[in-house]
Amino acid sequence: MIDRPENLEEFTPYLMNRIMARYNKGVETALKDAGITVAQMRTLAALAESGPCSINDLSVLTVIKQSTLSRSLDTMESAGLIRREAQDADSRVRTIILTDAGRATYEATWPAMLTMRDTMLRALNDNERMQLNKMLLSIFYDIRHHEF
Image (cartoon, rainbow, N blue to C red; front, side):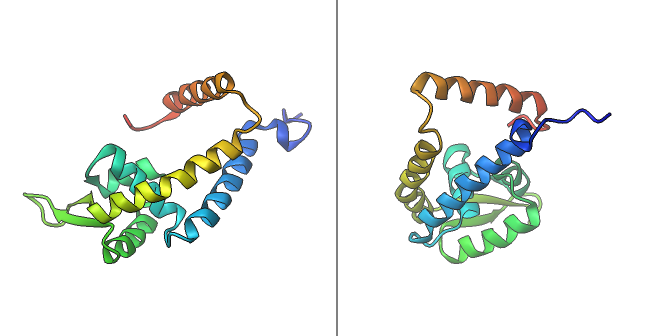
């Protein structure tokens, strides 16, 4: 017999996926007025926190496939939000850098991310939120394939 939950809401990965899909839909709506996508916001946030990085590292940090991220970066570069600089030894390898306009967009739109987070976690008190984050980090650190 197959070991499975009574219903899908008891299957943690399914539930996490549903929650994040709903969160992303809300964020998508909130970011639309700013003219950026959820993927672009993830990119701005990753660059703001981690600093310049390669597309490989940025793909891991943003959880976006490299081919999809590359197209998003094209749009962001055209909008002046990021710039790509060739690395010294190999001009094919580029470092992605947040511009001042990109930082300003990130700072202007980050409150929408916080609002959606607070909406998503409304049922939890501050201690429960900290506990949830701690548990999720434990899971994340256990299953990750990269050091970041």
